[in-house]
Image 1 (cartoon, rainbow, N blue to C red):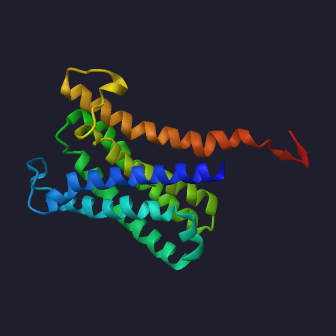
Image 2 (cartoon, rainbow, N blue to C red):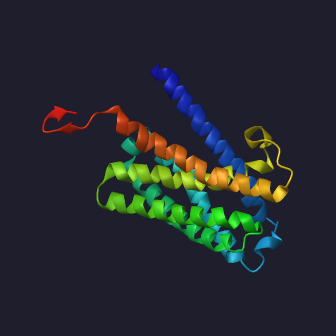
Image 3 (cartoon, rainbow, N blue to C red):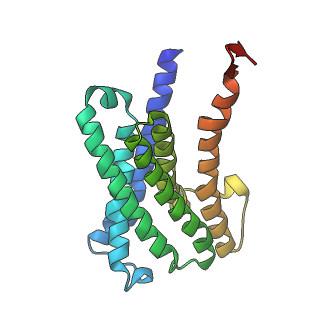
Length: 212
């Protein structure tokens, strides 16, 4: 049973890392090595800042959740955590700016709050660890990383047909907005259920040495 769980976790992280790498090379590397997107003309600084910051989020995030590294290499974990937080804040602020001029006007209404949530969850993860609140730190790091992945999930339509999820939508603009909202908010809801809702009903509260 334990081995099956371990294998499942490995597959889960492998999929996330592969998706992140595919997204990164499709949307970031091509920009930095010659390709220029006209949609961000005049805002290249913010776009490059977002790419560089998100690099820290996408590829340091999984390492931060690796238990053996957290326990055996504490110095590295702390250094990588600081880089992750700084990079994520830069990526979040840049994304906030870019959301205001994003080509898909309807998508701006999901990208803007997602950017705010990315900044907020990352900031609270940092604040929690300064207060030595390990539990809250872990929870907000999960939320922060989920926000970072939301930018990846929302671009999956470029490589994966999405019709099997919500059916065929003929209007490309409506389809794009649906995808942006679904992958911006749904992952956060799933995470919230997993780390807060489910644990809250698994153990009965102890009050005055009695279980209620």
